Amino acid sequence: MVDQVSTDYLVIGSGAVGMAFVDTLLDEKPDADIVMVDRFAKPGGHWNSAYPFVTLHQPSAFYGVNSRELSQGLRDETGLNKGLGDLATGAEILAYFDSVMRQKFLTSGRVRFFPLSDYKGDRVFQHSLTGEKTEATATRIVDCTHLDTTVPSTHTPNFSVAEDVQFMPLNDLPLVKNAPSGFTVVGGGKTGIDAILWLLENDVPAKSIRWIKSRDAWLINRKNTQPFPEFFNDTIGNQANMFEAIAGASSKADMFDRLEACGYFLRLDTTVQPTMFHGATISELELEELRTVKDVVRKGRVTSIDSDVITFTNGRTEPTLGHVIVDCSASAIKENVIKPVFNNNVITPQTVRSYQPVFSASMVAWVEAHIEGEASKNSMTGVVPLPDDLDAFVRMTAANMMNQALWGQNKALRNWMRNSRLDGFSKVVGDVSADDTEKVEILTRLRAAAMPAMGKLQSFL
Image 1 (cartoon, rainbow, N blue to C red):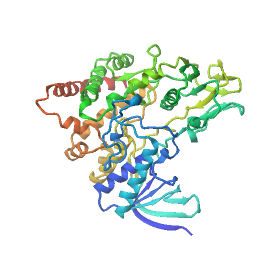
Image 2 (tube, rainbow, N blue to C red):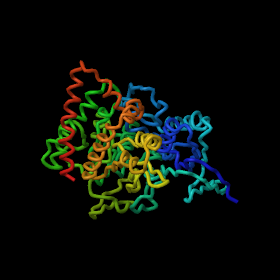
Image 3 (cartoon, rainbow, N blue to C red):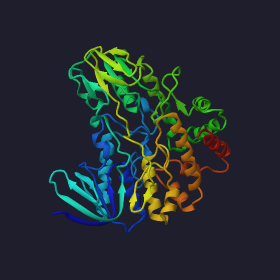
Image 4 (spheres, rainbow, N blue to C red):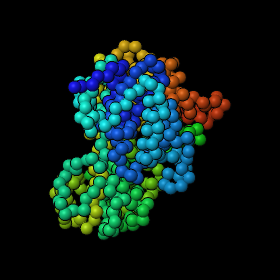
């Protein structure tokens, strides 16, 4: 026998995207009834499986759901993020989402949550412990699992590993009891960065760490992502620098050189040209620490790890050195397939602003509540592709600028964004007074360079 539930919105997934979407839908569409389904026992999505020392990479001030602060606007007083907006830990994020679910969603009487339930398709979900199936009669299906975030603990490496190799995801690093001869970190992305910083912070000498990177990446300076008025020159000023650098570029290669010169991009090794961009964000202090690791291996992707050697795509090998091999090779997103956000009775939240998935989900909910007609809704929620290679950065930046220009034409949306905690920057810009000449000059530069930058991006495409 299959149980039946009836609802307006069947939301699949209670990770950050699902929570942000439902939070805004509750506020903007007060008659909506919602059923949420998730395979985990608690809301929070991939944070339930994250490594124990994980933190946000961008300030807590604009993460989570729109209606409730995560950070209370705190600044870190110590450590490698000193002076910048605090970065919530994975444990803090899980507690936060659990609190939002219990104290807002469930108490509203308009949200029913079905944890430990696998969605089987066709509006049917099954409880993983009892096997009981439930079928939902729903007006709308909201697929908040589309991006399918992967984490190291559930990742299967795409290379072979011999049984006698000390190999582990970085989740297990705090469990190491017998000191090895050293550590080899496999993966050049943000997870690899986190692993190396954790080892250094826990007194592992830099000389005992080897870093295997198939690609080098352009990185974002966290100082330029702070949604606080005192960082206006760093955030909005950096945006103006970015537009001017793009507008003045003679080629894509020249554009990246200019973006580094103006402070928009950082890289770990100034002698190595990056070919990857995933939007990873670090502080200047973190960058200094990472540069103390000198044993960096760039021989392509790993193909196999045996007891004595590591083999790469180009056939060259490296000794294992008796190291613990730390797997940081998981891609954050399994695949980046773009779909229409609104398609008949299915809503698929995706990024509509660069680097901000939770703001994007919240805004998709606002559009659902206030914009009529599927075509109009999709025009307001053009998908900004997630970055990977350098061409993807061009596509992402062009799509992001087009969305911003379109949103500026809708007064109701502008007002919502200015008051949106997740937006981060609209209020900072909107609060600039006419007599603040320094900030007005930055905004003037930004607006003057926007159209030339867009034209240059289009030519690069």
